[in-house]
Length: 106
Image 1: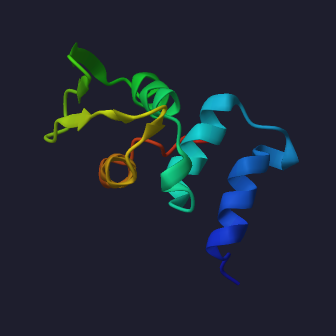
Image 2 (image 1 turned 60 degrees about the vertical axis):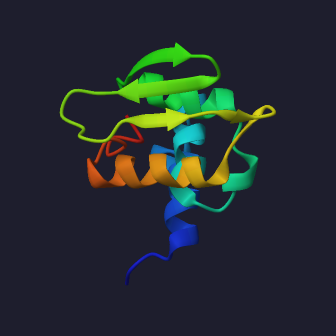
């Protein structure tokens, strides 16, 4: 029997064997779930990109992330203290396409 999306997200939130997961894992799970794109903190989005190994440079309020092996350049700007929902979606698509969050429970 296959797991539903909610079951998979819950499993990731609990971590392996029901243990609590790290802050990074919670942030990554929130981004990957797509359920709360409007409520992702900009600092959390930046922290996930940093932890995944992206290099960041800042030009004004533009945070530009690049990574060897990833063709796309991620250019994000804060909206108050939140990330813009469409930019969270773009980051999620890149994480999924390049399988960067594959070890969420590491």
